[in-house]
Length: 432
Image (cartoon, rainbow, N blue to C red; front, side, top):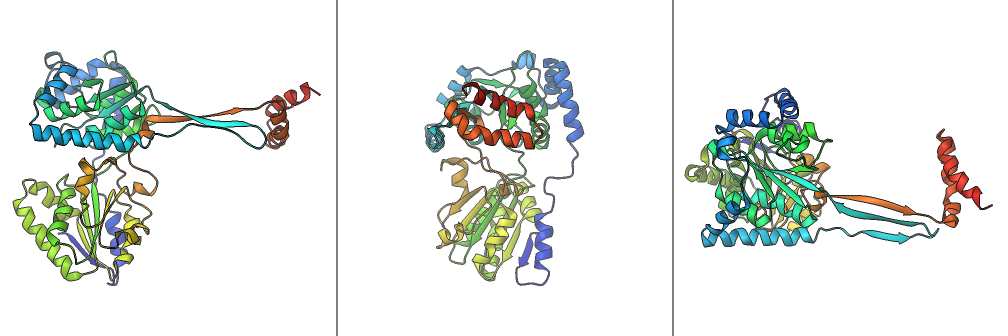
């Protein structure tokens, strides 16, 4: 049953805390399984990948082929319906333009002591992108992960994707063509992440791994962080909608269901200052569920993880939103900018009545790979910076060393590191 709360009721804080701390990711202990898979791939390489693909995806890599060639991706793009191809083109163009504006600038300057300081940005050499092939295939996620990597300047972009029974969604191949993916391997699961991290005879290792996946994929990324960089450890999708009674309840119901249909563990939450409007939205959700092709998943998600919360003033909903630190936050009000100014923790915010979260999933431009599970408290959505690193540099002459070196010597001695101090002292004494 979908949770209904009123912020003015006794015990609200207790009930709200229980709600936000509930485990939506399930209780499957996959860590041990993933540890064994990683160890097996590291020890046996391509042989382990062959065995896991036979077992989990039901096909032989020897028969279907290990990889998918660029010509097949181009053919899939050319074969698209013209309307679908135009939509994919628009999405790619807008995502690329937004992320090109994120490219950082190098710094190079001299300070008051004539010390040259700065930082130079460089791109990782190779990046791996995991593309799910299970419950659904999302070409939009491929674009959102691959395009920032290419904008950053990644030379080798590798996709791994499971192909159950040897089949792959042609729309994913079309997106790979648009994004300029360099390699596509028919490998899925934790074993694919292990192969990207450690490398095998066939698949060379990468520096960064991004992309969504199931619990096994997420756990593999978590365990392999440090061997490679990762984007984030993602959990079930979520949306929070803050809406007043001036909205069409049908619109808000559709917004809530846009996340509920992702997965039974997804979460959709409505904050409103009008109890009657809350009832109208609840009724609209029930009606739309009856007609929704994805109703089985959406109904389970809405029933088990959804919530409608009534507050006396929408401004009072904002601290509650910050406690949730949601992946997606819709502010469907006339004063959206005022409420936005109060937001501290959110992956992405959608302002106004005509900005449904679904636009952000596809064609707005900002990345839809966003922190979940309250991780927006300390992390951000995927960007070009996930595929880049910053190297600082320093240059001194004898005079600038003389200006700041004695302080370094003093601190080194205080820390009990005399060789540090001596490396400075010898240079300062040389020209005396």
